[in-house]
Length: 160
Length: 159
Figure 1 (tube, rainbow over the protein chains, first blue to last red):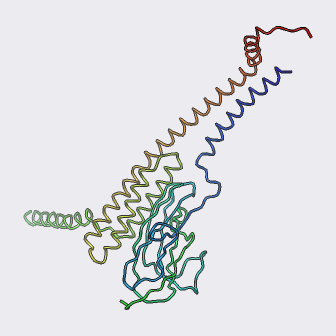
Figure 2 (cartoon, each protein chain N blue to C red):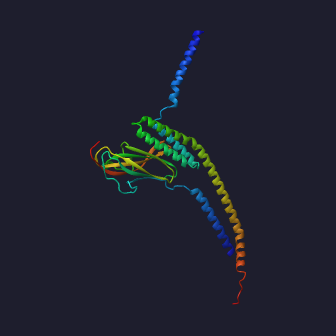
């Protein structure tokens, strides 16, 4: 009776080790739910201290955060556009020309914080500064819209 | 005869002029932003292929990022300093080409590494299976042998 228990315990431990070994090999670097991240950080690289009032034509700084959890290297483009509060929608791209474009290729589980400097040429109240994340898809050989973030700004001063 | 010779010389001269016109044009052909971006996209596709074969594409991705950065700089300079922009496009194009050419070797190395990992996993699993059989056969014996050694000085007391 004790012999059987000993056999079961010893074989059980070894089978458990084998299962962990094999599953570790096959599950390594698998992303169950692939996703990408886009974040907008203030000048101190935190989710705070965002500029709210900027002068026309004056440079201001922000940080773009992009993270890749797609399970493979991803090629991203972040398009910066100008909009208004009327057309705010995170799930569709803004129908406006890009005022700046930032590209990057990230490994799986890699993220990057890229400092950017912008200046706006026209006055406006509640100007929506939109950052759109686009991902390159090899089957269509084009970039596809993924998500967007934005910041409201009051742009004051003499128009350029 | 004289006419034929002069015609041949004229034809050769014309051919030389045409060749001289075309050779510099093809060797220093201007790269446009969209052409270089297409090359980068192609390089990215080859990186994905190498990665899916198990290759370590970290250095290729770093080169690709350098190419992307150069194109961004070139796009910004294109209106004000086209010569500098062209130089940056050429550098970006060269980097993209380097990635495209290096990707098959990285993919091959990846396939070899995956094969090695699969072989070592199979060997480990086989060793564990053998260990399980040995454990099934010998653990009770080892246990009782150990038990006997550690309890050999025990005496049975009368109740």
